[in-house]
Structures are given as structure tokens and as C-alpha cells.
Amino acid sequence: MADFQIFSDGSCDIERNLAKENNIKIIPYYVSLNHTDYFKEVEELPLEEFYKEMIGKNVFPKTSLPSVQDYINAFTEDLEKGKDILCFTITTTLSGSYQSALSAKMILEETYKDAKIIIINSFHATGSEMLMVLEAARMQRDGLSIEKIAEICEKMKIDGRIIFLVGSLENLRRGGRIGKLAAISGGILNIKPLIVLKDGEINVGGIARGIKKASKKIVELTTEHFKESEENYKDYIFTIGTTNLFDDVEPLKENVLKELPDANFIDPFRIGATIASHTGKDTLGLCFVKKYEFYM
Image 1: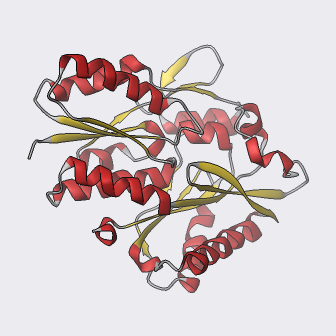
Image 2: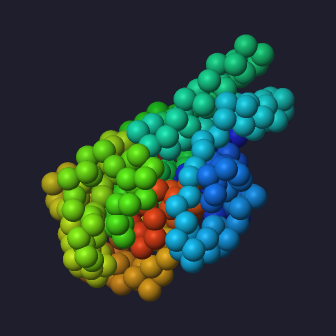
């Protein structure tokens, strides 16, 4: 079985040390705080600096996806070593990153004719994309082939979910990601829109007044999902992400565990610059995907 390298675009929000521990390489997005100068997230623009500007100075950042050349440069190093490539990207409804990666694949296959280059539109972003990529890394450690991992992830992406609240719809509106959310009255004082990312699409989850009620609504939507789908939540991995609502992370986890005892959580994470540029501050979300063993 040929050796292969796992990649993800930067929208997966995996912390760089965690990525390194799992032998995952990240291809970053670009972020601009002044709409003129673009910097690679994390590598050139540290997350703390990004949040200091966005929240502290009320800046509305802009993002730019990894270019075809970025993907070519990243993949070539491992192709030269004789490795195959498995790459995950954010859902195509939110970015053209998948198309950039696909174009790079087509170009590189002209030179590396025997290499396998598999690009997966994750249908997800941020924490659920991260969980999927981590599951792929776990499958790799357990000796599964690149083809089998890709096959499982194509099923996994259908079952995964992100359910989250945003402080307002202003950043989504400015970034052109408003879509089905246009009908939500997000401008009403203290109304928090709830968003569900499923099947690669942003869907309206409802609204709630205030962060605490919105957080409870996340739990309600999650328990409803498992009842309606008749899926066993114990087959899933969960995580919580936030921009700046750190004090609300543990209460959300505790409320989930009250409804779904012994749900398997990994450590919470801070939402990265690419996603936070579009959600804005006061974002809090629950992400979950099914463990790979339950597709075997």
C-alpha cells in the first residue's frame, strides 16, 4: 500500500500543533484586515492579532482562498517523495477552495501520472471539517488505504453537522454568505440567529434572544437531530468552537451531556480567521461527525 499525505485547507481550524501530531498539512487561506494587504492565516497573521483587530477595532476582514499554485506547491513536495495525496476542503457552497485543489490535481497528474490525488469536498467547515480530517488521520494510522478512507469520508460528510449561533448576520451579509438566512431578523436587539450546516449547505436553525437561550437552542436542535435520524450519538465525536465566548463553552458542553450522556467530546477550539471573518464575534457552535468504525 502506497504511502500518502493528508492535507486540508485552513478552514478546518485545526490547531497547528495538533495537525503536526497527526501528520496533517494545512494549506492556509489569506486574510485582509484593510481589504488591500492579504496575509496567510496563522503563518503570517497570528490568530490573536486577527481577533484584536476584528473585535477590538470593529474591523470587517476579507478572505481569499488558496490559489491553484498554492495547492501545486504544497502537493509537489510529497509527490516528489512518491507519496499519494488526500486533501480536504471547505464545502463548495462557502468557497472555491475545492475547485483550486481540483485544478491543481489535474495539472499535477500530467507530470505525476502514477500518483493518486484525491480531493474531497468535505461539505463542512471549521470544527466538523477538523473532526473529519482527524478521523482520516486516525484511519491512516490504523492502516486503511487512501481509497478506503476517501470512501468512508464521503459517507461521513453526509452525517456530520455544525449547529451554531452568531452574534449578528452583518459579517455574513458583507461577505455575501447570507443566502437562506436573509429572512432572519438578525438586526433586532439581542436576537441571535442559529445556523445549521448540513449536506454542504447553510440552513436556518431558528433565532433566540440572548446567548444563553441560543446556546440552549443548539442543544435542542442537536437532540432533535439524533431523534429524527435515529442515529446513536455515542457513535459520534463532538467538539465546541467559539470566537470569543469562552465562558459559554463549558455550559454548552454540560447541557449537551445532560441530554446526551457520555457523548464523546474532544477539546474545544478557537474558530480561525477564515471562518470568523464571515461569522463575526460572539459565535459559538457544536460540531459532530460519526467515528469511522461505524462505516466499516
